[in-house]
Length: 69
Image (spheres, rainbow, N blue to C red):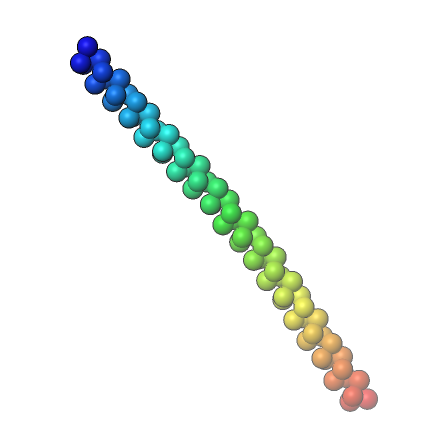
């Protein structure tokens, strides 16, 4: 009887470890997805900034050309 209690206790504790590991893995997967989405957002923002800078540069050149005429 004592051995049965020990075996059942060990099985229950092993189950807790598996649940904890699964929870940690799920949390890590969620964080990885958040990081990936953050990188995509950052890349999109960087592209918009680059486009705006290019437009400002073109307008500055056009303004310079107009004053030289």
